[in-house]
Image (cartoon, rainbow, N blue to C red; front, side, top):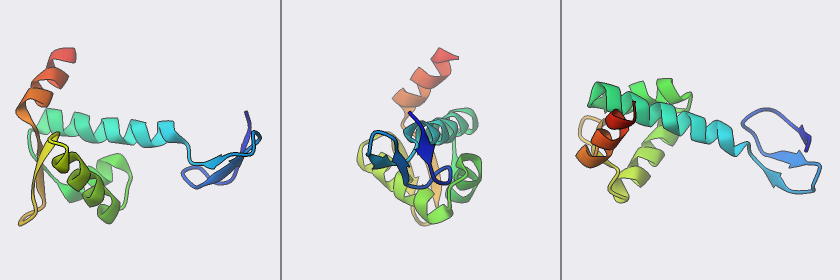
Length: 94
């Protein structure tokens, strides 16, 4: 399957579907979660740099993860940490 367009942007695939490269986004999300597992607590700005996303997009993703119980997000100082059970699971995998 071939794609046309810039990486990370919506692309027309040869099967006629339009979409972005999902693996790129999943890889970035994995980097974000790994950083949180390693550091324990991290600022949204640091996570944005690690994932390669703009801060506003990273904040939206963090808010989504917080709504679903995967992270704790303290908006007052933009600090994020993994939910303890998820962190234990991620650290045990290494």
